[in-house]
Image 1 (cartoon, rainbow, N blue to C red):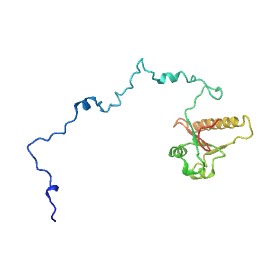
Image 2: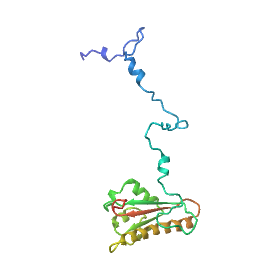
Image 3: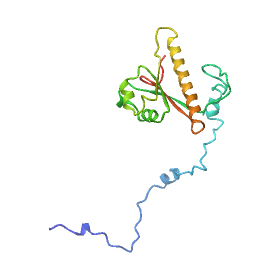
Image 4: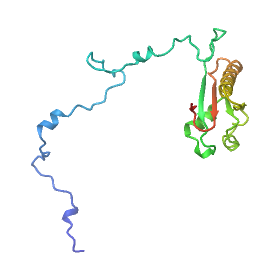
Length: 187
């Protein structure tokens, strides 16, 4: 018990004001203000005429007009509001699914799947097997792959329309297109 207890006591209040250590004046003036900007007043800076920045208006010229259809011209002018998600099933084991993919399967009204997707994946996600339509896998050579993809796309659109007609205007339908492996096609 021979320890000094003065080190544990708080310092006594003194009449001298305490001062902060001096910092170089240049560093304070050169530091930009980091105060947050309210979202209502936050705006993007205007591009200067001398900069080479690309704005979203540049990309608008690269996009096709809204009436353009990538697959075929639409015979009717009716539009269906809904979402088709392209999801990758990974290597086939359910533990390799991303959280986003799992939530998309749970929230989807219907899933259009390749036959190559593993049955363990369909059994692992609750209710997925009951709301899944399988599309034909590619066979043969030449344009068989393109024809199979076109059939899968048409199946997704048909499900989107039938779900929209069944639910009415209560909410936009969500259809998930499940592929084996990664979601992006390789060419």
